Image 1 (cartoon, rainbow, N blue to C red):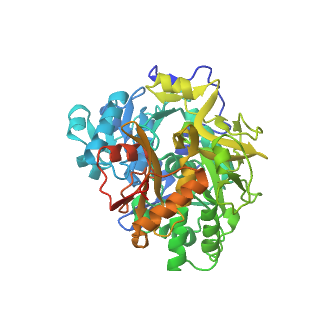
Image 2 (image 1 turned 60 degrees about the vertical axis):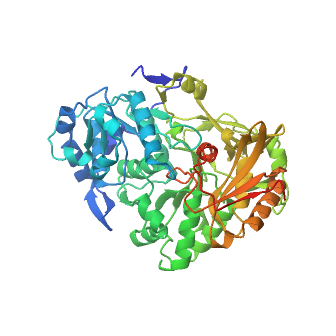
Image 3 (image 1 turned 120 degrees about the vertical axis):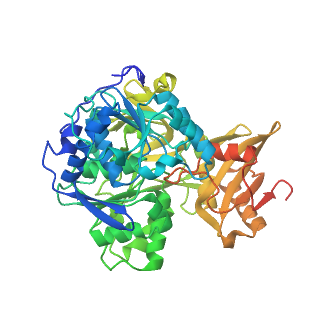
Length: 566
């Protein structure tokens, strides 16, 4: 095991419950009969999994000649293309470990992204930077000057060498976060932990080998897209329809239209994506009645789940046959490879409405559902198979601590952060939540906590409430604390539609909601055009980057309303 992996002291070792990772992906454990359909040039192009494996094997000689062998690392940006899917397995079979670097976050400049890639490359010391052909020219010149940069396509049909993938407890994959709360950190995963996660997902979706259809548009650069979509479908021999995040962004309705057209039983996405897709499907009306009746596991995670989104989606998509139980709230994170909890098949969604001010003080005080000062929290379900939470029946607010067979080995090259996060065989997530009746209720991250005059508030409570103001784009409001000299100020950034151009009225409504939900006074509202707020590829607003962009004067506001003079 590489000494560069910052391992957590006393980390537990769990056996995978099924076959090894490589036996599953190559079809050695059990023959593969299904196919992957990749969205290319405006259509799906189909390839049997057996063809994908053969093509990957026929890349290994070229990869070996380029320096990929056991103990080496290959930096990549994983996009949703056929060559990338094949190259992923090809690198592993040649002996290398894959490091998945983030795609540019929304609002990130070319210079900022280039600096991010260079910083990660300095930490990784990769033997090569590997991307799809049309991205080669996007890589910064400084990076190209010191690291060999090649395309996945260039290794096609280059020959085959004997497979020598990473051993069960060696480094196989580094998942770099997209930096929603900090600079990217690399979760180091072994084949054993990855195989264990595939067991977890197979149980979660009740995978039926050779029979089921999975539909995904999520980026392969994100753990939900890679493990929840691609690798789980591959290992479970499901038919996968792999679209692209660009296609979804342009036309959100394609998500459930594909589910209906191709008989998708399982899928995954975020709260914001679910709302956008449901709204598009309702407006377009292009799905046949009953077209979504077969959907059983549309897993929703990666960001805080809103009760209103679940209800809206159930109504909008129910007219096409989608059962409420087909939408599955879940909780997971890259440090656990992916899934930790999910809403089990036999249980309806659960919600608690708690006093928001008391919640910020760590107290769980239930209030009426329509209480304006209430914080609405949705259950992310019970633990996945083989997973446990240290605060399992505590019914108190605390850090979520996870024990799982699929935990990362640590953070690559960051011993201090690894020791803080992975200790005593458990993952200390920095997420805050509580468990009631076996159900996990995530509340937020430590990054969501803002201290105002000695009181702590959850920024997401204010942001979620502001989402409901007419003219505010859903999922496009963020509360940031910063300092003007020695004075702390609370600034709300809001992206608006045409209906939100009455800036004083929207600002006053937001200020009222902030007082109701968190008993805090907003100092100003900054109104922005759509797509101004920096977001990760799955839609999480990067609060730390909002603060930096504002302080540096990089935002171009439509208007700024000073609420201190109102």
